[in-house]
Length: 542
Image (cartoon, rainbow, N blue to C red; front, side, top):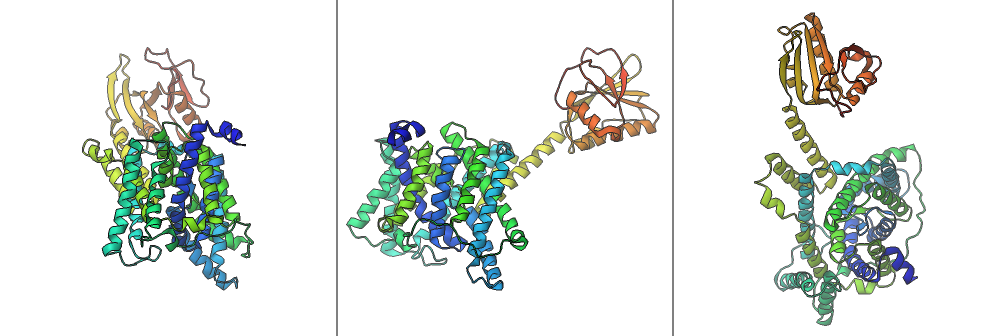
């Protein structure tokens, strides 16, 4: 069996690194899963079961070896509304006050189906459209969110909002243990990488607290992690159209947030490891994990950037790291809850602070004054939206929209023209730049139908038409020339543009010069002439 695992997931050294990093990640998953379950308003075991199943299944079926998935805060803040409204519906239907949990499980199953559909349709590749400034803002904002998420660990009761801050000796003890964990995590790799530094830090600090009987917060102060193996849920809620209408909006939002966070994390891990994951396979893997999780009583999940970075920096690069993390986690729940509950929160907090330091893109601060102001604005915008809303999907979408608008604005001003009067009296406009919704106004202003000769030719060799607005602009220009009893012709258009014109049919009534014999055009007005010296062959666009 061991030899089979080695052959499947890597050599002996890599298997050792994966197993040890998986153990480290499993320890870090426990308090996170409990905290996110409490945020969502569900029992802690629901978060732990989700962390176990999502982590295990995505490690096997996902598209990014070494990436860790589980219950996340980004999904928890959406689920809390679903659970609350579901509980109210349960009371109305006579199903009791806890029906919201079952509605959540069904919503997670539908969420998984949507994610599988996205992967099947290969929508995961659109993550490549996310600009670098958005990536910088994403990781910076996420680092700040992870940092702020550790603040409750410095209160008297981390799971109770508004608890009093630690003070006096308790505060200094907590800070000292956190700093000790961070010091071990920082300096140990300079001497040896045989074992993950984060794991050593957790073990050393735990032994100090237990051996010296120090009075500090431990995992057991948040909630008990003891439980059985997850079992198939027995649903009592009705499976009808009303239920579907209720859960569908939540499921679509959960699926979108989960995929965006997972694919962004996948891209980040790709950069850290200098390898490339499979985005579409990751969509399918996330969907499969959430379907199984919903049927077996978990709150669903997606990729966790903090734990993923812990895993990568601890040496976990293969699928075995995620598989072992999931197995270790369920073993903690089944057999070692007593030991896990004695781990000091200070040790896990110290590990997460090191994650913050490693996640934040410090170079983005240095380059803010050296990059275009629009890019700097996008970095700050995405960071701020991430911190304020804790909604990573909203932050990323906001950044992409702003970046797209800036690109469209800049491209719109790149359209210009040159003119030439030929010996036969025809005037030629040489158009440069893209023709789309943002540039049609500048394009139209380049022409003077009343002053031009009877025949006008637009040379599109250095221009491209990208959308319906561009076609409409050409049609309106042709109508302006016809009103003045003059003729407008196009030349040097690409094959793709001719296909656009053919599809438009009579919507665009303009003469196209047959200036390239390699083109085969139907249903267009044509005027034969000898190919010019500047004729081009097979250029994309128009």
